[in-house]
Image (tube, rainbow, N blue to C red):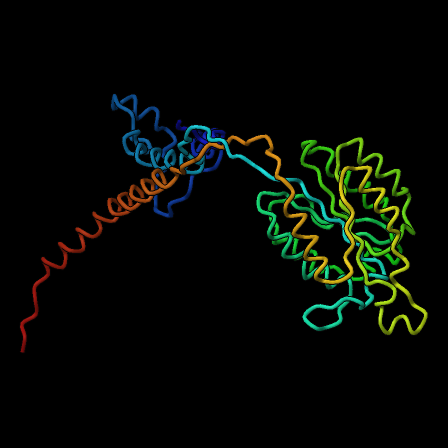
Length: 343
């Protein structure tokens, strides 16, 4: 089916005529005789004097040129038959804890000790990019929760936002309940069978205005599955930190995280090192995709190049037609001039 994407462009068709009526006539700079009794002379001669405006035959090519330009600007296109675009997968939000404790370097990656957040970046970056067919979003939370990336098919951008996350960017505390509440706000408009929240944290709820279990009950009512991941080495594996009385493994509130998973139909995972986190990602990747409502799309073939190229060709012909008398006169003068005898 042929149609114009912007048909209102043709409302500009009378614009040249309106401007010709409103704007004063241009001064050609040539000497002219102004006669105040032109009407009397026309009556005596029995005919009207020639108008300064060109005839309609002379204006026709320029009117056609203007219409061709309008036709190109209106974006003509040929629309094919509607085709269904099936969208399978989940709406997957990943909430990552960026509180101060996520900076503890008790994890190992390629024989190097790195922080918990750095390990999440390394492994969950690949996890995000591998979720083909899913809309993926990112929440960063500390003392407060922030939506860093909305649900999108652009998984590479979501990974970039995760890679740029900094410790303490959302505060030093841990607002698990607020993170769940923000996820519910973003997921409630999506199909009920495709709402998933992956919650990565290493501590207990120490901030925010919503209790984690209250948020979990709301998530269960709205059909949002929550998969909490508790990250951090065991207390006896905390290395040098344990020598100074710092025991980061004790901060993790595993009973609450297990209760959240059980209440929402998800599953709780414990990641003590990079191998366990890889195993968790593999299990999350085995989530069965849920078919969403297919989207109908009509393939559009742009046709603006045809009127635009026709306008360009017509412009060249008008330029050649305007210059041809001068060129012919110049050639005639050159051919008629006598040649000087060679000495």
